[in-house]
Structures are given as structure tokens and as C-alpha cells.
Image (cartoon, rainbow, N blue to C red; front, side):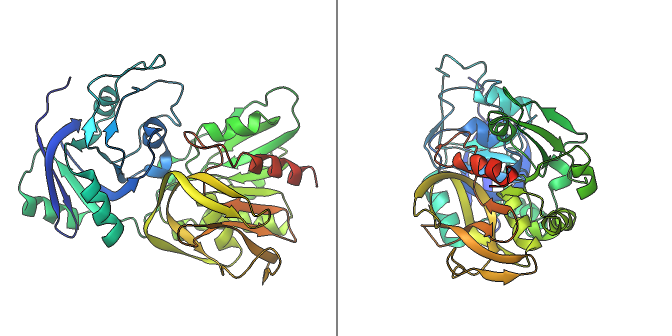
Amino acid sequence: MTSRVPALLVLEDGRSFSGLSFGAQGETFGEAVFSTGMSGYQETLTDPSYHRQVVVMTAPHIGNTGMNTTDEESRKIWVAGYVVREPSRISSNWRSERTLEDDLIAASVVGISRIDTRALTRHLRDRGAMRVGISTIDTDPQALLVKVLASQGMAGANLVSDVTTQSPYVVQAVGEKKFTVAALDLGIKGMTPQQMAQRGIEVHVMPATSTYADLMAIGADGIFLSNGPGDPSTANHAVQVTKEALAARTPLFGICFGNQILGRALGFGTYKLKFGHRGINQPVMDRVTGRVEITAQNHGFAVDAPITATPDSPVDTEFGRVSVSHVCLNDDVVEGLMCHDVPAFSVQYHPEAAAGPHDSGYLFDRFCDAMAGN
């Protein structure tokens, strides 16, 4: 087991926690957020949506099942820092190839362990997500606080260019090819094109700088807007691409960040949530069917659409009638949008559910129906 050294965590409101190092030693800064997932820590770490965030795990024991190549959602670990109560001393799983701490060290991710993550989570729930610093170098809380206050916050952060692919790549359809989809990579997870491929979709993952013409040049039957990090108010290019798709009546499906992009294209605003939704146990109601789904989520911003815009009573926009198709049962946050006059819809969560529940896989089938003209 890696030797531990004293480590310090300081929040921007001055509250501090002393513990021991976990992962790389050094100093890091980001936005402190908490994830309520009991499992799936590898998918969380490699999800580009967590770029520049320091993730606090609410489950007390992390690292039990190790790490493997198969479950990686992208090319690297993206979190800015990692906070756990008790790191597992061993990795015990037939799929384990490395320990969690080995991967954190290799990725130079600074973490902290042996702190009261329950108290930290309650603090963030009450006070809201905020900037944070973790250090094994500076153990003076006041000195570290000065550095935290000098670091950049998440509001107004344009991070898509940091995570998007630099060149297009293709995920081939499994079996008979039925559709071609252009996926605008705003921070896509690897399981998402795999889920589409399983349904006979050939997925072309395109850089975030791609124009609408670029996306359609591959012969796309539909456009997919992926998840991603940062403030959606900064993603003006993606919004313009989406508006062109709506005007052309191109079938479109967005998730997470993509939901916020569709919302902006339809004329709605976005806002920062107090502490966001992160984890694999978030309850959402599909207002079309009345079905409740347990969903995987990671977002700190939401669409400011009227909750009264039900599927039976939509509101008018530049692109026709729109309703709020899904809502979070914990706090009534908008979790999905449905266009009634153009073939476009979105959800605020992750239907690929890696790791997590598989209640929402039907959304990929709904996308296929839209591309088939149903």
C-alpha cells in the first residue's frame, strides 16, 4: 500500500478537513461536488463531465474492485481531485487489473482520505457546491484558502474544448447498419456510442467545433448532442448548430449538457444548481408515460424551462411547441425536453448508465424511431 502523508482540504468558505493523502501528492483546485453512487467509481473518474471537479464520494469504502481497461469511459481520468473516507487496502475482483490508487498516481490526481465525508457532503448540500483545494504541500488552512479564492469557479467556465476529440472517429454498427448518427462530442462517454451501435447505428463522433454542414456531410440520419463539462451559457457554437438542425427538421437527441444546449436553442435559459445531481440513484418521472426511472446523473446546471409545460400543455417557441417531458422527483428540476413539431428531444441524465441503472435505455430506441420517421 502506498505510504500516506498528511493532507489538507479547504473549502472557499473557510471550512477545512485534515486527513491523509490518497493518490498523487501535490496540490489541486476545482469545484467540490459529491456523488451518491455506491459503485461505478471508475466510470465517474473517467467521465469527461467531471473535468475540473473535485469529487467527494459519499460511499465510505472506495476501491474494492480495483480498475480495469474495459470500464474506462474516455482516454483519461478527468477529475481534478478525489475525496474518500476509507480507501480499500486490497482490490478483489476477477476483472481487476490495477488498483485505484495506482491509476490516480499515474494520472497525477491529488486526493485525500480519512476525512469525514459525511460531514463534508452535508456541508456542500447546505451551502452549495464551491471551490476547494487539496494539498499535501501547504498544511496551513489560511494559506491554502488564499489559493482557493484565487482559483477559477465553474460558473462561466468554457471547458468543451478541453475534452472534445481532436479528429472524427467512427464506432461501427453491430450487425445490420440501420442509421448513421453524427455525435457532437462535448465530452462524450465511451458507452454512449456503444449503446447506439448495439441498435444498428454507425456513430461518427465529431469535434465540438464541427458545423451543421460538417455533421450532415457524413450522410447523417440524426444528430446526437453529448454530455460534457462546464457552463452551458458559454457553448454558443453548439447552440447555433442545434438551431440549424431544428430549422432543417433533422432528428436530434441530446443528453446532459446536450439537454442544456437544446434548451438554449429553443430559447430557454440555464442556471447553476445549488449542489447539482451526481450519482446513479436519481429518481425521474417520464411525464409522457408516468413511469419513474432511476437514473445516472452528473450535472451542476439545469434548463430554466417552465415546469407547467406538460406534454398535454406545451409552450410555443421559435421551433414550435415544446414540453418538459421529464422531471426530477427530488426537486422538480427539468430533466427532459420534447419538441412536438420537430423531431428533437433530450434528457438531463445519462441513459447509457455506465455504471448505473438501465431504466432509460428506451431513449436510444426513441431516437431510432425519430430517425425512421415514426
